[in-house]
Length: 400
Image 1 (cartoon, rainbow, N blue to C red):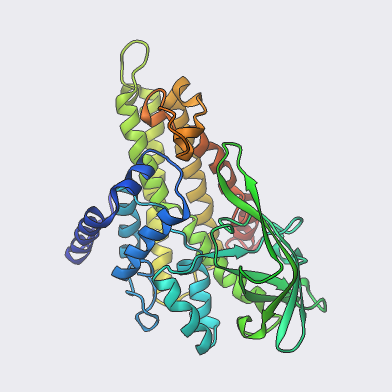
Image 2: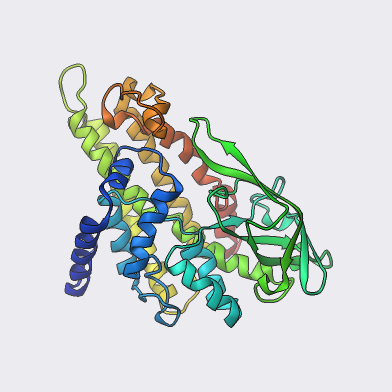
């Protein structure tokens, strides 16, 4: 089952394919295709190419400098980007804090931050999770004391993706303790170069560095960096989380990994010489995950269409998309590990991290599946764990 494209959508798909084919740097394409480590310069180089085309923030409204992409155009772009081995876009700016700023920010904040998000000259990170305040985000303790024209921030964030690359952080902080715990939270924009901000790396099992702990020691944040009203940060955070869970549908990643899985299954042969794709059990698993992905695309299209029409995504809908997207991505990485067999068990940090001149041992396709599988175990935890998302769905969709 394929989504039917109108003539205009077919023309847009052709335009996206032509643009990516002509403008994606070959060295970046090969890194993505071979599961090699990407550094900050790789991500920024590609995102700035998209920014000059107006496509890094293609879904933004035109009044804020976007292209006002339809729901289908957003899906088309992500699908083609996955097929053509584009890097995962760092969406903290365009899909998370950007919509918060243009929806709730002041004109000064919009003028200062939106242009730098559109052209990807500034990298943002997300300061939400804390030790003891992950899925229960409202339990956060990072304190921002009000000193009139500025706040003094003390505390810690953890599991902060790419904080070591980031120029700015959007951060939830506690500014009050009266009433419900959600009522004392505010939404601050913090320059990562501010004295007192310390980033501590958290290395992954395979040696890669995505995550960090971030410490704030008497960090002075100007009041002009407060989004909206003090104490209403929970409202802005819920708005952002709906967008984050849409991004966690992982369209580009799933498209890319499915394409890889089909290719590997067509190359790998069993001891009897039969291709893996011709094994009925494996072929059934592959077909099953492809059907699930098509159903996810349709569900996402419905929700994006509602959002483009001005209706909120709704916590139940966005939770469903998040759960299914992450579970499908995890299942594909499991199948890739199975398809790679013993070749995938070799740990080759040189080729994987792009360090040194160590030659690749074994087939190219076997380098990345195990690290991807290990990293994707976290998908059903970050952005709101699956268990919490199911509780949200039970409350909002079923009234339980």
